[in-house]
View 1: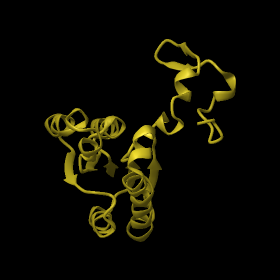
View 2: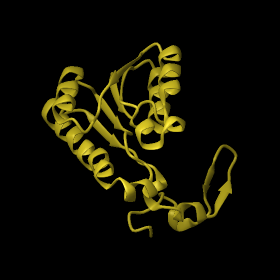
View 3: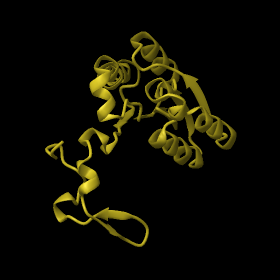
View 4: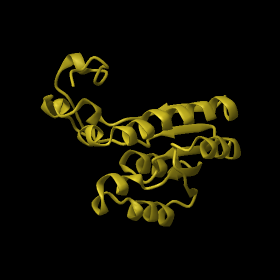
Amino acid sequence: MHVVVTGSSGLIGSEAVAFFNDMGFRVTGLDNNMRAAFFGEKGDTTWNRQRLEAQCRNFTHRELDIRKRDDVLEAVGELAPDLIIHAAAQPSHDLAASKPFEDFDVNAVGTHNLLEATRRHAPDAVFIHVSTNKVYGDAPNHVPLKELDTRYDYDDPTLGHGIAEDFPI
């Protein structure tokens, strides 16, 4: 199985890379370290990409900006993945207000480019889009949690399936 992970050097993407690598799948990470452009030196994810390259024998990094339609179409066509995990995003709700075009181009245009490339070149692939709770602003930080044996979970039974689309922002 061939897995493609966008945003592969970020928090969620890198965990997906490690998970599927450990399962023995071939993993290609697509990332352009745009986090450094958004957040400066402290946002640079080069260290995480290098960690994955050193630790994950089934992982290959590919520099790719998901805003560039032709590059995305070419990459998905060439890679022919079985699974695409889309974890590339501009995650800061606060930053979006000061960089609205960049935010839209990464989050909306980039996602559209990936979906269209999948439709054209890998129509049988499973496409998983993941996101951060940051799209809800600070509100999720005020949801009570309960500690379980192996994780934390929401302490509100109405959130048993996670945060719904109508959650206030």
